[in-house]
Each structure stands twice: as structure tokens, then as C-alpha cells.
Image 1 (cartoon, one colour):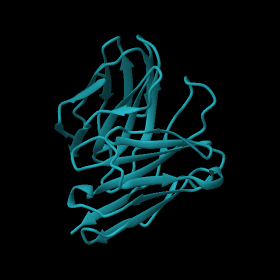
Image 2 (cartoon, rainbow over the protein chains, first blue to last red):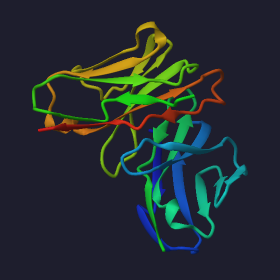
Image 3 (cartoon, chains in turn yellow, cyan):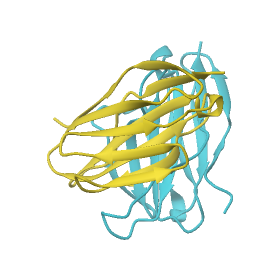
Image 4 (cartoon, rainbow over the protein chains, first blue to last red):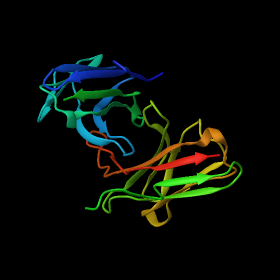
Amino acid sequence: EDQVTQSPEALRLQEGESSSLNCSYTVSGLRGLFWYRQDPGKGPEFLFTLYSAGEEKEKERLKATLTKKESFLHITAPKPEDSATYLCAVVPKGQNFVFGPGTRLSVLP
Amino acid sequence: DTGVSQDPRHKITKRGQNVTFRCDPISEHNRLYWYRQTLGQGPEFLTYFQNEAQLEKSRLLSDRFSAERPKGSFSTLEIQRTEQGDSAMYLCASSFYLTATNEKLFFGSGTQLSVL
């Protein structure tokens, strides 16, 4: 069965304190891995797509990386506005998007 | 591009009542998805359409749930005889599907359903 787990469940950082979020997956063939940001009461907002091991994508303070078993979302010098839930989703071959439970990030000023 | 629009944003209903939600996708998108999300969990797949054809329904989806996408434009999700366990955020997403490697979902803000 295709599974996606994310850790930690919740993370509190001080402004400027860099850290990483983890997404581990078990799928029967990976078509793509996606990172989304979700603010309270809103739908997920697309951040990155990664397709193959070794691939990296960057956007402002965020950098996503992918290996054969997991993906990391690195947050460099976060600001309070980066506070949100970060969702990872995988797309197994022949199937639809499977989302993980998310990591709730709080960045304190 | 006005994004994916969902209506209503919030719905409070009594157990046993029927409810219907609407989703207007991004205009050039050919796929439309419905997801359900409860607090602390990621979105859970319910069903999806390519144009007007419903291609897949989750095995977990009760017969009380039905979705339509007439003419391949907007979609409606109806829940009959609502139960308290149906309380959740119902999310709609759309995408322009050309090949399997370039699909990207764009989500609406969701409809928050509370069943009393």
C-alpha cells in the first residue's frame, strides 16, 4: 500500500532558526513528489514538484530535495510569515495524489 | 485566472439533511478533483473527473456521496443523509492534464461542513 509520512508533526522555530521537514514515502513507482503550503482555513498552495532522486528546487527561503525514499523541505532563516502547515504528496504510477498528514510549522518573532 | 472557486465557504447542517457544494475550476483545466480533509490530516481523495467523465471514486466513499460535472465545467458534490462523521473541509482542486509527468493540482479554499 502506498504511504506517506511526515515528521515532525509540529515544529516551533525562532525567527532566523533554519531547519528541515521530512517526507518519507513508500510507493510502487514514483511519478512525482509535491510540496504544498496550507494556511489555516485555506486550501493547499503549490510550492514544488520533484521527479527524480537528486533533484532540488528552490523558492525564496525554501529548498526541496528528493532521494529514493524521502524528501526534505529545508527552511533557511525563516520568518513568522512562513508559519503554515506543509504538506507532502506523492503520485504513484497509475494512481492519484496521496497526501501526507503535514507538518505544522510555527515561526516565532 | 481567478483560481479555483468553492461555494459555500461554510455550511452548518443537521444530521440527516442533504447538502450540496459547488466548485468552479480554473477555466482551461480539464481535470477536477474532490478531497476531504479533517483536522490534523492531509487531504483524502474522494473522486475525480476528466472533462465530464468521472474516472475514479475512492473505495472509502459512501453511497451517500455523489458528484457530477455536467459539460465538463463546474462540479457539484452532494452528501445525502449527512452524519456527524461527515464534518470536514471539502476541497476541490483542478489541473490541466496533458501527460502524467506534468500534472499539478490547484486547490480552492474549501467548504467547511459542520454536521450537528
